[in-house]
Length: 273
Image (cartoon, rainbow, N blue to C red; front, top):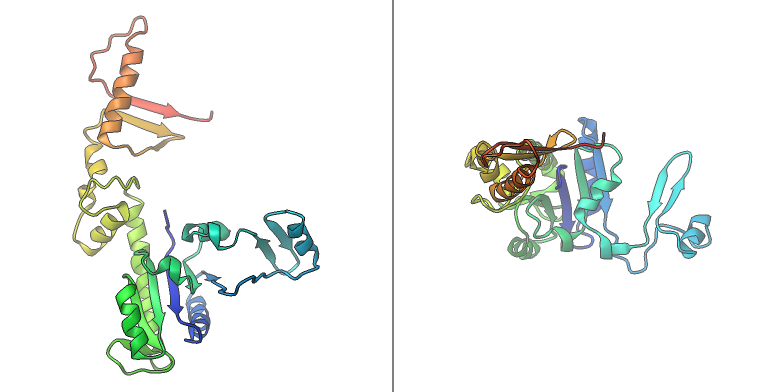
């Protein structure tokens, strides 16, 4: 499950996405944020490698991925393209904890993602209306280098401080939501009225719900079976808890000298040592 705030700057070509990303990275770094960025290159056949280089030949001969390390940088080249891309994979590429991931493009992946904050770059009001109909919340803002002073559209150059403020608010809100999410089991069992653990975490953050609205959490007090792996409790729904508990008690009851009544508390511990 994603635990790092993700913000995508989307819009048509030549709408100013790169210019805004550059300003955001610089400003966020200046106030202490650790930023990771990702860029979607919508050019058929594009490769960041160069034909004839050693790394190019490594890939040509079938190596995948190819890791290139120099004095100044490290590059990992996967030859999988878009077919295997997923937003959660971005976290794999981050070797150190990040405060946020800034994405440029990726509209086809994030338009309906309710966990990604969107900044929509538009060139005119018709584009704003078009995106308003197809982009799902959370939308941080609509903005433009070409028009401004509209009720719904911020002018990047004049309103950049406001845009930056909205971005920082989104980051801090998401941090608090993820802190709440860490207190939930992460099963996405659908037994609460919020559809998922993330949905419940958002509701807790806004005050619409409490952690006690989590069915799994509230039922733990009644469960007679707990599973611990390396000392960490594995969240399970009551039905699964009952099945495992009864199965363990049934097996143990066949051992000599054991008196089982059937309602005992069961704790299953699994450890590598």
